[in-house]
Each structure stands twice: as C-alpha cells, then as structure tokens.
Amino acid sequence: MKNKLSIVIYNFGAAILLSLWGTILLSWPILLVMMIAQRTNKLIHLSLFGALKNYSQLMSYLINPVSDKLQMSDLQSSLNGLIHFKDCKNLFSIALMLGCIWLFIFLYFEIWKKKKIVSLPHSYTICLLLLPLIVVPFSMGNFTNLFILFHRAIFTNNNWLFNPDTDPIILILTEEFFAACSATFLLIYELYFVRLLIKKGR
Image (cartoon, rainbow, N blue to C red; front, side):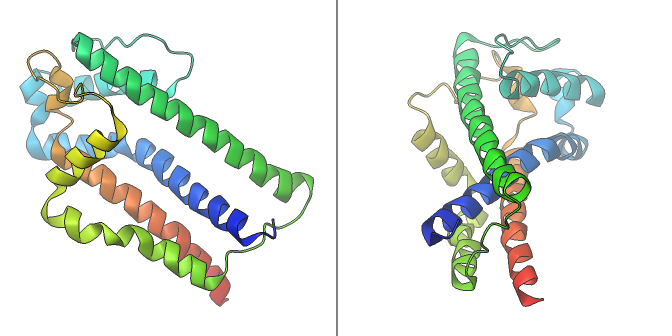
C-alpha cells in the first residue's frame, strides 16, 4: 500500500470503524452509569438489569445480520419505531461489511503477504487527528442541534422522533447517553492517531 491516498483511506476507515464498534461495546456500561445517575430505568418501571436486558435485545437485533425481528421482553415498539430501528440496522450492516473489508486488507498484507502496511505520513496523521475537533466547539454548547442535524442528514424520514408513550425505550436512551457515546467515539478516534504519532516518535 504505497499510494498515499490509499493509506489515508485505510487509516481513516480503521479509526472510524474501531471507534464505532468500540463505542457499541462500551454503550452497555455507559447506559448503566446513565441509568444509575438519572434513574431513567424507573421511568419504564424496570430494574437496572431489566432495562439492560431490553437494551441488549435491541442491540442484538441491530448488529446481528441474521436477526430479522425486534422483540424486547418488556418494552413495546410502534410501527414508526420499528421502521427507524430497521433503518439503523441497515447502517450497522454497512458498517459490519466495511469492517470485514478492512479486516481482510489487514490480514492480507500483515499475515498473508507478511508486509507491513506503509505508515501514514506525519502531516497526514496530524490532519486526521485534528479533523473531528472542528465540530467539538459546536457540540459542547449545543449537542441537541448537532444530534438533530446528524439524524436529518442520515435518515430520510422523521421516524427517529420517538414518542415515549409508544416507544418507551427512548426514556433510557437519553440525550446525555448519546452525548456520552459520541464523546467515547471521539476519544477512541483520537487515540488511534495519537498511537500512530507515538509509534513514529520512537
């Protein structure tokens, strides 16, 4: 992989995918902390364990390619809610496919060909490290607007505007929860390129 553009795309894609799947894995403890702090599980009349169980069922549907039906033990979903979760599942499927492609490229060069992937030039690493920090000043003071803008850009309908009466899961998936997940995503992304800089400095 000697082409600079290919190296940039590879590393940027790796950072995004690792951040996404890392955030998904950490979303369980994040949700637990949020529910303890905000007591949101009480709003859906479930214990912490019960709320996490329903969240796990939701996430299993979203990230499992062979799961074709969402059914949470204690929480109902409206038709619009199910459509939105289906849209989310499609996005997760794309992320999973891209993750498999990235893994294939990594294994091809590192294991099969026994060649190190050419490292990202220092200046490119700095640029990619600083890139997401552009949105930080806007998100810190007004995460709500950023959250709305993101959903309007990604989704072609308004099904993401949940009604707690018909989709009670939203009562534990608070704005603070999504803000914490976004911060986690950003942290993992930054750490990826910080690691590259540290390796270059040795």
